[in-house]
Length: 355
Length: 263
Ligand SMILES: Cc1ncc(C[n+]2csc(CCOP(=O)(O)OP(=O)(O)O)c2C)c(N)n1
Ligand code: SF4
Ligand SMILES: [Mg+2]
Image 1 (tube, rainbow over the protein chains, first blue to last red):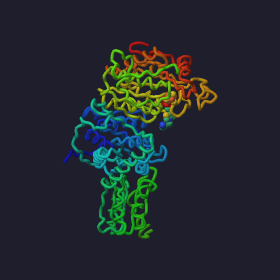
Image 2: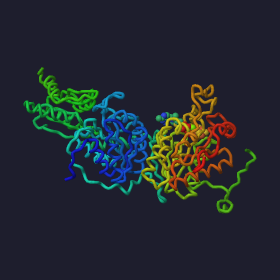
Image 3: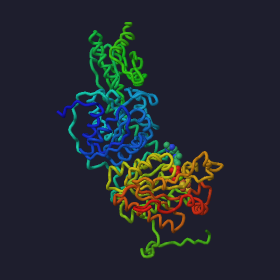
Image 4: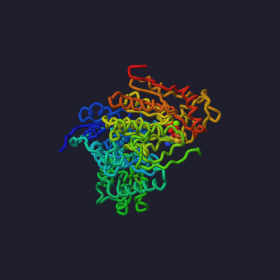
């Protein structure tokens, strides 16, 4: 059993970054996640020697991440929606150069400068590209403070296994809420680095080059094919999700992160009223767990998807189930958070005809 | 020229004591893609000569920019990273922070360093990152075929200043060396050129000096090169050298801009 603490999501995530043996953090303050850099500035260097650098912008942070990741170190940046938008070119370069690293987006409402309140409106950006070119990030969506911690470790492990950058797609609520959390023990920082890392050309070996430039289209296509093969493998092997009460379910509530948490509560309220509602909660949204929706669809009367956006993940849900079941959506936008009672009311209205 | 006769060389008789010139061993055998007469090739060679002389091939990491020298890593036989356009100083910063005992340099054009990447440049300099910036100022965007750079001289014609750079609407050429020299954390800033033999020799000394300072942990050093771009200047290599001598170095005065303990 690891150490138990009561912690704010952002601080728990920062603590996990130290414990996971991170070598470097590069970031620029933005609400609602500035606690991460503040916590690290205070704690990290003294404890593990981790480098914590406040960059001049998110453009700079992400390119620092590229450089540091290219040395084979465990490195991370965190930001919130506008800052993540600013990083997209760099994220694309990181994907193209196949550098493992972690990017954390504690989402807030948009578009534009938007609001500092929680939102989930960067789902498309996180899962469908964001930057230019055919690439994917491995995207993990925590629904409580515990997963803010666990997904730091998992994110690095998956990212390093595939040399695909990983993203923790959290939101302002996850970042700001306080919960009990179990922390894993300190993992020592690495002292040996991968073959491909630019650490100085070994005398007896070829030099290493970190680049995303492949000027000949024949070569660029091969690189793309290799990336796509990795993505197919990731889709086959790394999809993670949680289900509840599917055994007797007539309806399924779904959502990711904050949305799934509200869906879970709404499911409980529904069960109290005697409605047979189950839950599907993707933990990875890339790779997306299409199969569980596909398998469940013929057995149920409908799905209600709950997100703090205009309906983004619901497109993947619809893609998964086709015409095998009905899919309805309930969302709030712009930093407003759905309450479980309203979700339940919406469910009763659209599926049961209760006004 | 036609009066040059090819003399076949028998490798058996080439003896070290007769060698007057050879390519640094840290340059690869790949033929340079640079246009004839371009400064990029000369600076590559000087830099790798210094790496050879300091015997640091296994301890140095370079950062290539986006610009004509994007393929610098094809020629420099060392570990290298290719940065996004303008971000070399951010990339270099992080490499150095991860491995403070290694040598790090960025190699950047004027569009890269002084336009799109000026924030990264100034902040890396202001933090006193212990690395070397090799800055090739050729007053144009070479790679994208000769548009105006922040360093384009007043009235200079480029593809986006067909009537000459009008400083009233397009601003004045940035003197990056002078700008960075004002920052307390910069240690050694010098402007060099490679348009004739004397300047080439001095330029090499400057590169060596900067890397020696890095070894001593002194902080941010930049060697600016007043370069050329014969292709986009629409000049012969020789004409371009003359332009460097007569025009470029008038505005961008060659010499040390900031030296330790000095001006
Ligand atoms: C984000 C982005 N914007 C624009 C470009 C296009 N681009 C490539 S190189 C370059 C200018 C290069 O000029 P400079 O840095 O002076 O290098 P030179 O080729 O002259 O050596 C531009 C605008 C790009 N690659 N990326
Ligand atoms: S375009 Fe200009 S800068 Fe680029 S290689 Fe040719 S001469 Fe050099
Ligand atoms: Mg240029």
